[in-house]
Length: 251
Image 1 (spheres, rainbow, N blue to C red):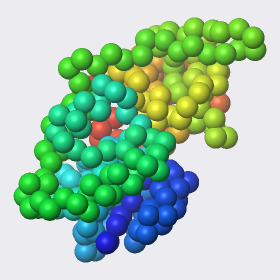
Image 2: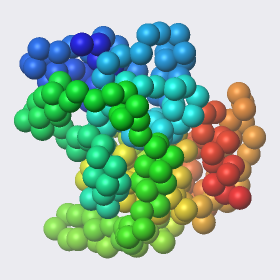
Image 3: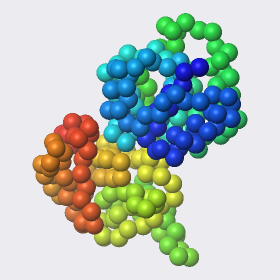
């Protein structure tokens, strides 16, 4: 079986591959971004099965299918919440919720092995799935974050957040009052809880709120630099692959 893993977090990709090895399967290739995946698919024979993370460092993995036609079977790996997962259930799409459980992985692989379906029946309308994931009809986005500060719990409304960022394996939020707070979970998990009309993941390590943007400056290599109202610890750069989507977002 020819297997491909597309996952932007390399430790997670290696962990998934180890779990597959335990099932007698090994990924022939591991890719980590939309851009890298498009190039690979354009120059290589497509695999039998793809384990595909939805949120990659340079965009949603659905963007891959806008450039190449893929008929491989797909099992999505995702940190999306229960609202978004309805999109998968309604469309009979296999998915594994992160962190991936060994028994669930085995069940998904066994299901793939046992399925005797025509390629035409395996095709998925990725535009519909993308739309449902980003704008589910009954989606409720997070309105506040509860943070442990010493022996106390502090509530921070999303309106008071300028940005979220990753640093030294931690995930933080930065407030309009120029304070930083450590959060539970990954930046990817935080992003799935935010309203995409108000928050944008500009690169691998930063999510910004539209109302907190003070200035946008042209930067080297066709990138953009974002200046927020109070955050100034490091430069916030919109990755080149995300510039077009970012410009559409702020319009």
